Length: 585
Ligand code: ARG
Figure: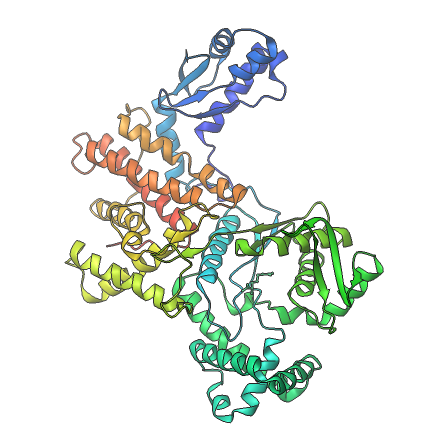
């Protein structure tokens, strides 16, 4: 096995470097500031479009430039370079270089990927549900997307600090605790083992009373003051609500197979002690000003639909702090104490303006230096089959556990038809992995910002661009490999390549690129799309190139190595998306 931190250099990078060298050697006047513009191509292995901008710069016909660049290309890996069209350089690499690449990746414990993000400290704020309320489908998305990003960034070497910004503070607790106080029967239910569904019901009852009964609303407000000043009895009830909610959330995280643990919870209440200081400092700096009794920050460009400036309310006119003040204190803490170099907020697109205002205020206060990036990573809404935001007929949100159950039920049904030989225990385990994996894949395989419909029949389909298709492709590769001796195959780089082997191997060479693309764009669908293409390339290869039945033992060995590398790459890719890859289906 190759040393862990070292990466296997992709062929595309070697080719790109050769193009850059050729350009600087042959046409130094054109070279400065022009990248090699190399990409995969249908006409050859790679294509460079560098002649086009160079021609524009030199005032020479692009074909002549392309000829010159092709003529000066000089690298061991290059077999030929031909010019086509207006001035494209089509580059074919040697079969030997491709097999050597397969061998190097197959022998690397991270399928060739290095750790380019070493040294970065990235905070990811994700999941962040609210105490005493059910998680809604929006929380499902932040949990799945945030977790995939956490996995990818840490795989690439960054130190990732997961922060579950639990909604465990605010005026709603006054109402809840007061209600419990006045309804002993309800109070008995609200211990640490209370399921979130019961708390959710309680929340709705308390809210109803709060809206209907002005005296109760007043008593609730006094209760908030009691909570904020640390009254022991009030605090104890609050702590019970938080514990019970957290337990329910953690059960869901465990079922989803996300990385979040109780240690990652850093809820809103954590920052309560800093809010006075935050308000005072913003005032002293002149960043926040009094407006109609409230303390507000107005930032350039923050206007609402009516053209009026939208304030970020740090302190309400009744003296209370809210969501915004907490986010400012949190941001300051993440920069000053956690020493983050980057902070990602994986939160619903509807909160875009909130984050714009928070980041702008923090920049002005000097809490967010230029060197630190704060990024809102927004996502769209999950819709029902009717194309409207996903709700039950009665209009309430659907418990996430129920959604997952429906996907697992569907997976069980499909598997019973597709894999009738599975014994009962394996069927259960695989159905759970396939159902959950498919829900996650459906979320991660589309562009983040788009809305999508929650449709279990489409999600759990063995033949489409789905999680279970990829899991099945992976299990099929493993089943092929179970039929060969355990020893690592020895790749013979001297063999000619079949076109299907070539296509598969060149795609395997792009894995690191797909993973770093996710880190750069924060779009997990780049990796999902890559894995789908890889599974398809494997199918084409397997249909046209016999593996176990290959007559020449050297050919057989090379093909086994391709199977192994594909299996490991798909498994690694699925793991980065947080999707299980069972060995058998
Ligand atoms: N609890 C909030 C909600 O459910 C999400 C919190 C997101 N994170 C943050 N730092 N504001 O909408």
